[in-house]
Image (tube, rainbow, N blue to C red):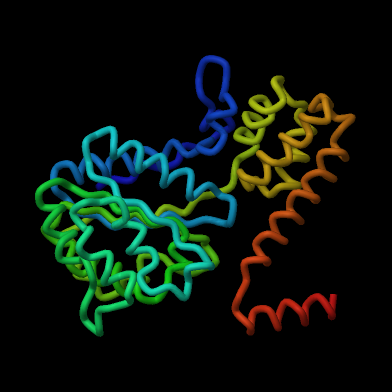
Length: 298
């Protein structure tokens, strides 16, 4: 599959006829990624399997893009199974696999095995049934935050990917870039030449994309200095840009040079809140010890 290049220039990613609306913000400047996922879904409808990983910094919009792909595939008649890994289920055997099968009549008989933690080494509950179902109707399997997978679900997915050749099934996963989980997380899979493999690394918003976000949230074009300040203060992180601008807009200020410092202050506050939320999910005792040391040593 040919992956389209991301166009350069100030105008890339700007919708025509009046600019973006609030509903467009999660997918702002994601035209290339949407085109790639559309192509994968089109190939899946023709029976070609795929493994696609979407990576980026926290807040880059991986979840929004995966949910868009799930809706897109459903509209085109594919069976879509979705799940999201969470720290709370990290110690639950087959937690994500159970989510994928929940509510699906075809897998009802396998859920008790998952819930009871049955299935020894080499046994993967529901896997054979999923492959059979996919041969009758192509399946898109979507897993958000794959870096939080419980160990059994991870092994289950690796086993599934090893069986992908000649099966009309695509695996689409999202993770944070720092998790170091690219296509190598399914190493050993005989995919070369028999399945589409794509890794999409989500960049931050460009200045043009930030300007579009300012216009969508504030209802008016922002001064060049204001847009530059927001882009620099947020690092172009889509979620931080969105939250900063929404908080700024609620204060009723215009996005001009006179309110640059106010926007920077809000961005710093938003980044702090996001960092605190991320750290709240840290459970690894070694990581916690390192963080405590860093805090003490400033």
